[in-house]
Amino acid sequence: MHHDVTAERRNNIAPIPFEADAPFLKIVGELPRELNGTLYRNGPNPQFDSPGAHWFVGDGMLHAFHLEEGRASYRNRWVRTPKWLAEHDAGRALFGGFGRRLPDAPTNLTDGGVANTNIIFHAGKLLALEEGHLPTEIEPGTLATRGYCNYQSRIAGPFTAHPKVDPVTGELVFFGYNAAGPLTPALSYGSIDAGGKVTRFERFETPYASMVHDFIVTEHHVLFPILPLTGSTERAMSGKPPYAWEPEKGAYVGVMKRNGTAKDIVWFRAQACYVFHVMNAWEDGDRIIADVMQFEQAPLFPHPDGRPTDPEKSRARHCRWSFDLSGDTDRFQQTYLDDLTGEFPRIDDRRAGLTSRHGWYACANPRLPMFGALSGIVHVDGTGKRLGQYLLPAGDTVSEPVFVKRSKDAAEGDGWLLAVVWRARENRSDLAVFNATDIEAGPAALVQLGHRVPDGFHGNWVGAD
Image: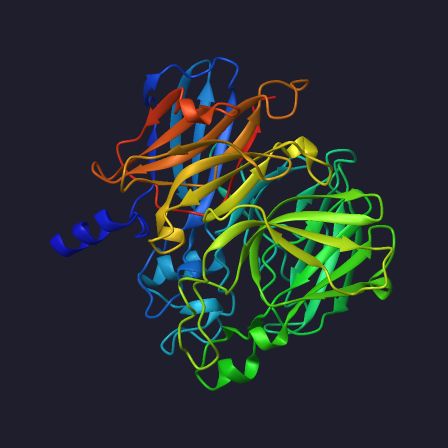
């Protein structure tokens, strides 16, 4: 036991082994009265240790911080996926990494989905997302699992953890990679209108099988980044890494008109890079500008022969991509806007796909491994220039910062920034509430938990109204 505790104190990745309800949490400072709603967060929290399983494939656990009239409560629940239920009944792990069934698992088990990456609210549904499977519907408040949601069988196959809500039309635009089966170069693409009806769903081929974590949506275009973190059935069959870094394949981004079809996709090229997350993108005349967190090499995944990638190059920085739709070039430009290591970019979502003047992301200590060391928050303007930075006490880590608008009509960026912070010395977590345009002042309020929330992936605020 002793060994585990010291390992946990070094980082905050190990799972917590319980579900809990904390109806009245201690608050340091004062929670803004207007902040009424729930911050839902999702991340990997394996129910059982599984040999050789990648961090990315731990069972999803939801964490809900409910804020109301200056009070705060907390609840966490595992997402009860078919995999979680089967393993819970068996009392042991039945799957290894990326849906691989363990040798002693029952042969009728085929679904290794973990619903562990994001949680969004759209058209009255709360959905836990993970890019390998359909959305899993969650009951708001209780966090009970309702099961897969396929919109009256209008969609099928994998569904991205990063769909985009168009702030003007209210429609949810989505895609899925591995759309023709595991490790295939096909993508699906579709949209669901503000009322929850699927209005479009189609599939198309891309230059090669790639892990496509996020994509880019602007007012009239949708862009699909095919970057050389490649998938290979051949490798997987021969016991090599199913996903690996193959920079010689180069970077491709497919640009499609939102009202066009996959037949009209124009492929742009650039030198190899990897991107998990897009901050925002917009149109500027004949150009499309996209701000992303770009790595020179993919982190967390090896070369095809199993060698690790270079840690120096496996850190992300705020980078601007520019596509000239009128030109005679198929190259797109990549320009770093800062040298700061960072991840998990967010904006005021009312500006998604439109020009934006505010962005935030978690920043890291460049000397430590990328994801275990997010130790501060940066506020930037529309050009990537830093407007403010807040650094945590040494050793503490921070989750993705989520923006919450002050009111329906508040100006862009006027509101709060919510982030879960791990306190290394006490080995527990706080929900920190910042004034979004003055993060340097530090948190205006801290909601204190008695336990830790492991470093997770994504979250979203759902207002009480």
